[in-house]
Amino acid sequence: MKITIGSFILQQLHALSVDRIYGVPGDYNLSLLELLESDERLTFVGNCNELNASYAADGYARMKGAGALIVTYGVGDLAALSGIAGAYAESSPVVCIAGTPPLHAMKNHQLLHHTLGDGNFDNVMNCFKQFTVAQALITPENAAQEIPRVISRAWIEKKPVYLQLPSDICDVEIEVAAAAAAPQLPASDKYNVQLAAMALLTKIKRAQRPIILVDQMVDRYRLQQQVIAVAHRFAIPLTNMPTAKCIIPEDTAGWMGGYSGNLSRPELYERMAHSDCVLSFGVRLVDSTTGYFSQQIPAAAQVDIQPFSMTLDKTSYPAVSTADLLQALLELSEDAPAQRLSPLADPRDKLATPSDAPLDQAYLWRRIQRFIQADDVVVVENGTSGAAIGGMRMPGGVKVVNQPIWGSIGYTLPALLGTLMAAPERRHLLFIGDGSFQLTAQEVSTLLRCEQKPIIFLINNDGYTIERYILGENSSYNDISPWDYAKLPAVLNTQAQPFSVAVETTQQLEMALEHASRQDRLAFIEVKVPMMDTPPVMKEFCNRCNSFNFGLTNPRRSA
Image (tube, rainbow, N blue to C red):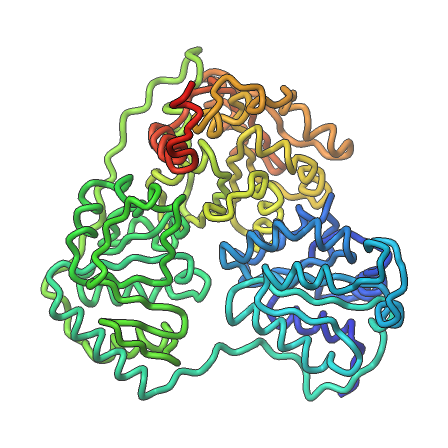
């Protein structure tokens, strides 16, 4: 069938169930945007800058399974690159499409704007090769093969990809085999699946203290129900890395809490340290998720389960998809477990009666825990918000969107735009600090322009508190300019009428929560708390970060 190159790209994205594409217009991508303008299945959402667009596409992908952005060459795609790297670190399948100069100009090495003026058109591609799993410069000759190849790699590997579309070939017709269909995950080798399942069954049956440890992989490949089914079939307790917060619903029988090395619950830490069988689903043991490498996981106990392979007792089983492995394991053992798992107890401290008492972090997060509802989407910035939410017991069905590995401050506000558009039927809450907010604050204007209605909590503790605890409590580099945050939403869109309020007492917080819950519009609550007030776990984490980063030359020690 005949189709233009630009239409073929949009068709491939639609096959992934993408219906929103983020980005910023530029002269090299206008032909594709003009085509998108008339496409009834896809909507372009203009962002305030390309970095925010990449964050929004990432947030969208976390909810929908894939996301996309369109930028212009050089100044646009390089501006988005940190967000693309974050999508790689956090396993988010994002398709970045850059409109480039015309193909003839690139082939002739002409000196053009948005380049270094040296005729080199390889440098930007070389940058993206470091942070994506597939890339291509599209030409009329390769478009029919390269476009689906690159986009399918994003879907299969759950990582970002990069396409360069020259401005003069968007409307060129090509011949393609058939209409676009959603990519399929690689098929397993049936013999290997059976071998792997039998070996895993033997390992489980011999174990006295098994445990399941999940990471982002379980969410990205939609394996939650199968993992829980295995846990309940064999009475194996479950835990998750901080990167996988709420991937296993926290009201699930057998869930033992989140695992972060010796910052975990003592019972969980001991269970892991003395386990004789750890079913490890795509786990990465990163400094920021292990309490600075404080994990104790016996090497001989670990079963390394990756999306398409398993390693057990030094034997590797390739061409084994996790979904097929778990299904085969369940079919091999249909016996009910000798004992049943129980839900983790959820004791809660009594909340003080709201009053004129100043707000602090302890009261705030106890109240927020009661405010969060089942099925909420909770977008959480690193820092005090991340530390508090990370240790909070969540209702069933809550989706947490965070970025604990890449850790780019400001990520969550544009990511919220993506999560809202991917799941408009759910309530979305954002928790972001004042320092992080100042990096991407302008995207509030896009939220308002697109009539999105989240509840945003701006935690105002007067600067970079997490950095103050690492180093420089009173140093000027951890200071930021004081903004009147609650007034910003009205300024950023003069036609909207958001609900905005600043609160400093427990009574004011209570009233703000009540009003926000009743609003059919964007709600913005600035929460003022003391500068050095923070959840205790964050203080310990920052001390470890200080020791790890600075060692014997620690400025704090030599001061």
